[in-house]
Length: 164
Image 1 (cartoon, helix red, strand yellow):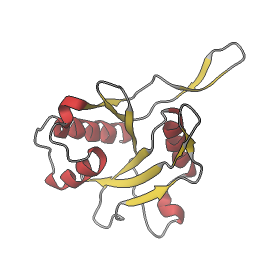
Image 2 (cartoon, rainbow, N blue to C red):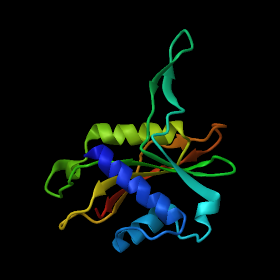
Image 3 (tube, rainbow, N blue to C red):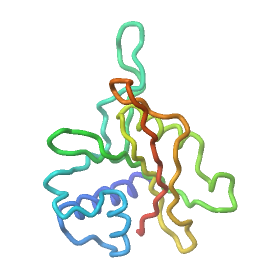
Image 4 (cartoon, rainbow, N blue to C red):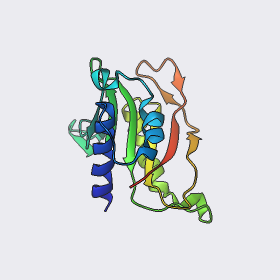
């Protein structure tokens, strides 16, 4: 189900970017939250699914290990600058559960993506159900250094809910 949900969200994002009608109008707010509300987005901005260009580590033989595989990466077309990273999760969050039911491994995963891609905006996307939590913004405590290691940027993570 997770792969199907991921494909659906990515397909809807691509439709929206290119000015096409998406299947559920209530997801317009979702799209604006992630992509902004720039009318020219499709010309300047794109998304890539299952991006696999980065690795977490190299070993002593200089071989890459632990390939990173974010579900959705938003980037500027000309500069290839990463604007956001989104990971979809087919699970229902609940206020009654510890940390709303978000797994610690999901948090580590999105933090690793943000760090390696030098990106400040991350999204965990969950299916929206009747009594879903409201979108929630979290700020990671460790700061992510930019490529020059001159300044640190706070990375934010937004929990979003997508109508299916």
